[in-house]
Structure formats: C-alpha cells, structure tokens
Image (cartoon, rainbow, N blue to C red; front, side, top):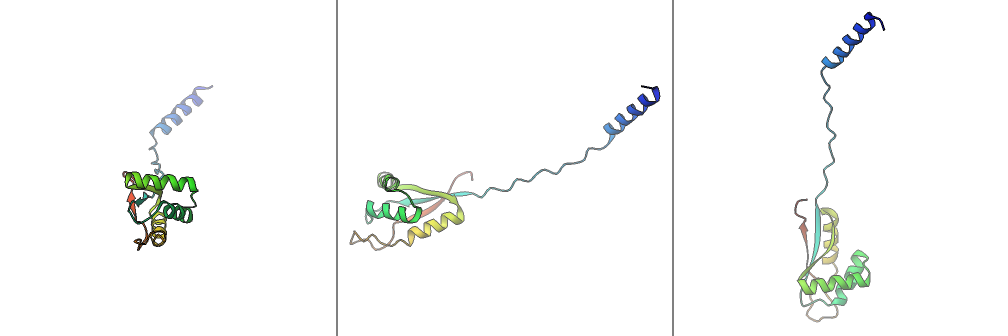
Length: 122
C-alpha cells in the first residue's frame, strides 16, 4: 500500500472516530396492562353444587376444578378463580354476580360475592 493510501485510510479512520455518534431512539416497550384476580368469597347461602355449576357456566371449568375451587373457598374463605386484565376480570366478575341466588337454599337471595383484586406489583 502506498503512503498516500495509508495516509488517506488514517484520515478516514480519524474522521469516523470523530463523527458524533447518532443517538439511537430507545425502543419503547408497550406498557403491560396490570392484571387482576377475580376473588370468590365464602358465605353460608351457596352450595358446592351452585359454585361448581356457576364456575362451569362462567369459565368453562371442569367439575373437578370447580369442586377444588369450592373447597378452597370453603376452607380459606376466598379463592382466586380467574386472573386477567381489568376489562376481562370485570366482565367475569359481573357474570358471577349475574348468576343469581342458589336455588337449593331457601335463604339464598342473591349471587355469591365476587370482587376484583389488583395483583401487587402489576
């Protein structure tokens, strides 16, 4: 390589090094929607059968899953039955509340209680 070419390459390298670096725009991550639990609460005016049928109707849960969730509500006083975005969780909660009273218990005058709970840190 001739001295001329070498000098030109050195000058080009220096020019590249001296060029201001372009600022790359940070890719903005789409913000993740917070998630919410649908909580089913225990009471004395709804039977296991009611809970199992309601969970099957609203969520499509099997008898076994419905029974497990009914036992959890009975044992712990509450159970998470569904988790999703706010809009979908509200829809499912409203479907539970629209399910009505338990026809197997005379004192049942309304639906089982269901509420929403935002997942901490979401």
